[in-house]
Image (cartoon, rainbow, N blue to C red; front, side, top):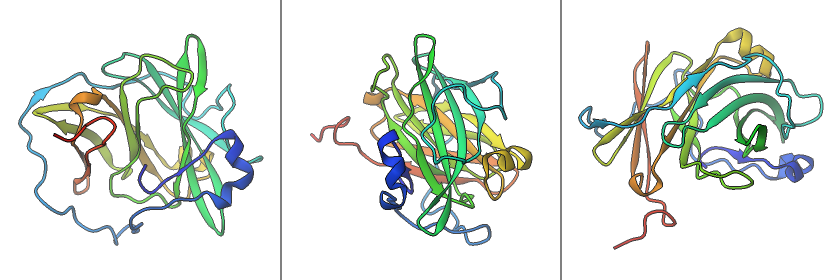
Length: 231
């Protein structure tokens, strides 16, 4: 994970001690322009991850690892493009050390049991506006059949996130967290969350591009040794 703090049920009591923040967190006007060439728009369209209906703004009916008293709200749901399996995102606020954070909770399902696996992570609040990956893994703890799920945050104006990988492009689902919903989660300002699912063996080097009403931004995921052994 990049710029995020992984949370588990056992980690809540030691929330302030497990913060792992990588890279620079720049604010609104401080976000630097994307460096390097942008991703090519060429490539075949692969299976898209799509938004599905759920009780946005409601409270999850399963356990979410969060501090006691922290507000929490569902911010979006999706059907993943390859496995066709569901994921539901909620968000809550948390104070870690002396700083406020927004914690994001992807909930994976086993059978009818939502929230079987929740690899929650926290990002600094206000959420940076440039696209950034928070999690990329194959969910496997208590769930089966998922592929490589990549998710993260972007500017509130983001309308589209596309993953470019090995000559293909995969559309992500994007959840805008507008001001009323942001307040329900305890966040300082609006932001967006995206999620996309790729084939682990085909996703050895992925570039993500976010586009909206403001300037586009890109980020890249490098090689993962476990999934992409060297020649």
